[in-house]
Length: 255
Ligand code: 0WD
Image (tube, rainbow, N blue to C red; front, top):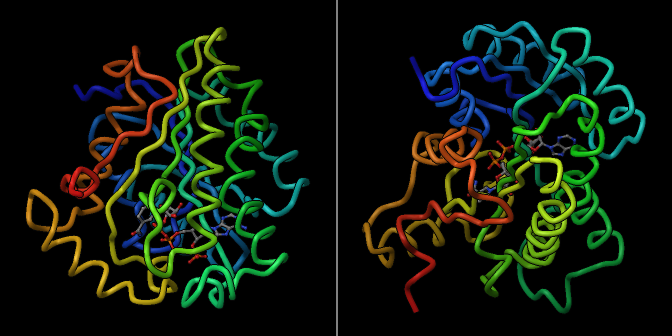
């Protein structure tokens, strides 16, 4: 029996089998969780349905986090299948590609700043609110973040500001929801080659640099991130909230 046995987990952000959310879903399924998924746009629906079926789920719901209406519909749609939700994983990030290269000062626009914060940070607190009625006193929320929130890293630019906002949001949400027994944490993953990452200028160089510099001398995999995500959403982590846990081969400790 796995350590998530009997738990119901909503997973957002599966775009391909390379997505971090896919690794998270696989690890959680292996540990016995029942899963539900969201997808962005009708084009991705069949693909997410296929991944869901492979992982024993037929709950696949639309969620474009730029649409308030989608958030309004999410809770009632999920409630048709489940009466409670034990955990939700927020694995969503976006910034216009032009902003993810060159100079932060020169390339950051008002629109780019707004969109990156809206899609990558605001969406987490909006997700919490959408699921509020289904969460109970041992539920938890998890988001995916990156070291660019804490340090200035080449090309990450406005996404760094958005991730810093997301991490602050983790703490405020943990503070607010803690009295209701709901835990909120962030997982700061090392660089992994996914669709979203492909948009970041000089990503390949970043992967090589991380592998060379990290104490473990390699990059992490979506399986490794998935395992820690599964732990954080399980009762094994019931004493942890408001935390940002790094899964990055130790890169963040190197000066
Ligand atoms: O190196 C990496 N890949 C790292 C990623 C290191 C550390 C953290 N992360 C974070 C990302 O910033 C993101 O928050 O992990 C999360 C997941 O990223 P990923 O697995 O690298 O990315 P990907 O497989 O591309 O999934 C991100 C998904 C989108 O995929 P597309 O292909 O459409 O960009 O975020 C979703 C979408 O599925 N997404 C949205 N979902 C709902 N509404 C929206 C939206 N408006 N926009 C993007």
